Image (cartoon, rainbow, N blue to C red; front, top):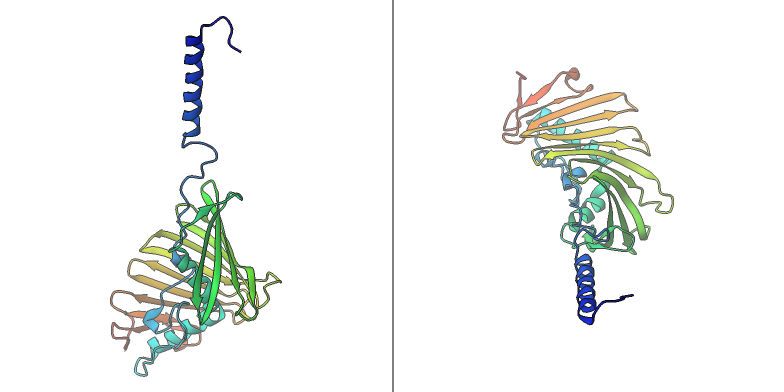
Length: 276
């Protein structure tokens, strides 16, 4: 209540209060302002490029190793890369397709304090309605992807196909994938730990969590032109290593039941050569 002041003073005080309130309302640092949406993790966090072997990435429809009858070392490596994908990451076709499509969607910040990307993606003749959400938690983001598809076998309704956590600067994180064959069970089937220092320095380690391949570990890394794949088969207690140079196509294979476990090399034309 104003007391002992003239009308001009009262009007001046009232105007000052109104201006102050307006300034507060326009303050961009308000705790209700979520700031910019987090950047999505890189696609390389769940997808590798093995195209040199003729084995497509998970976005492709089929899998077939490149035929090269005169290049035994290279052909053997191609078959092994295919086998490693089949028992671990080949089931990621829909997760990779939906995650790739999220980049073309504009997110919204909603009342649950999470960012939401809603869109559709087509893979394998089926349309998937995708709902990706991310919750910023300091320097990290918690992600989950819910998929709906009436034509999928079995039908999916807001099925959490994968979830994970990553650094907000996109340098590292994890993904956990669940079995779409039994959506109500919530069975975790694969876990990926990924790093992405730069577009030319990144990789991931995928561990099978269920089924006959449970415990098997498949890794893929990129370091400039150097590419490396390793596969650890727990049931066979076997370890495989494959390297190639992305610039010229040369490489090698080390496998316990091939070439006596000794390094087997190929040149830029994928022809067998002696290892240096």
